[in-house]
Length: 199
Ligand code: URA
View 1 (tube, rainbow, N blue to C red):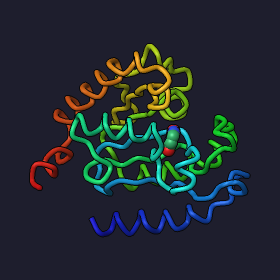
View 2 (cartoon, helix red, strand yellow):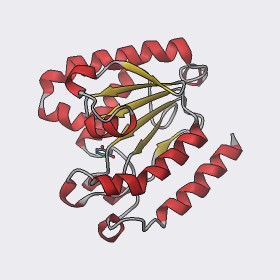
View 3 (cartoon, rainbow, N blue to C red):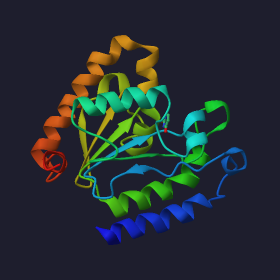
């Protein structure tokens, strides 16, 4: 595992210097990603918000706290058994949607993270990440919680935590999706849950 760790660290140091698009001019920090380097499950969000930009870590605001609670309900934890990254590594001003060209400039970093990690399951948080990673015309309201297979990797979209904060009525449906994820992890992953048991 040490080798993977080194690869991640090298990639991170390169990414922290990135000036491929204008978001580098307004960012406080590059939000590279966080988690364990043997994760079998990778979560992908859209782009950092204000709190993430200040801290340099994904999903650390109110949405992130909700995400952490939902993860904990299915025994997932960014410090123990998953990895979390965004499609765009720097905060778009005033939290606007990332522009297509910003996504294009940035996606190479995520591809490299994916290549190092080689996850078995990818979970896209919200429509923008799902459209970029799963399929451009995804209908998140209808297709959340459904597994799609792409090049041997299972991919699922879930409702974005910020959308759940705006519309808490959707929390039960989102929780159902996390239960489906838990079932799939038990079915196809080798060590995601073992490592927690062995602590
Ligand atoms: N929303 C995202 O999509 N990603 C973050 O890191 C924070 C909020």
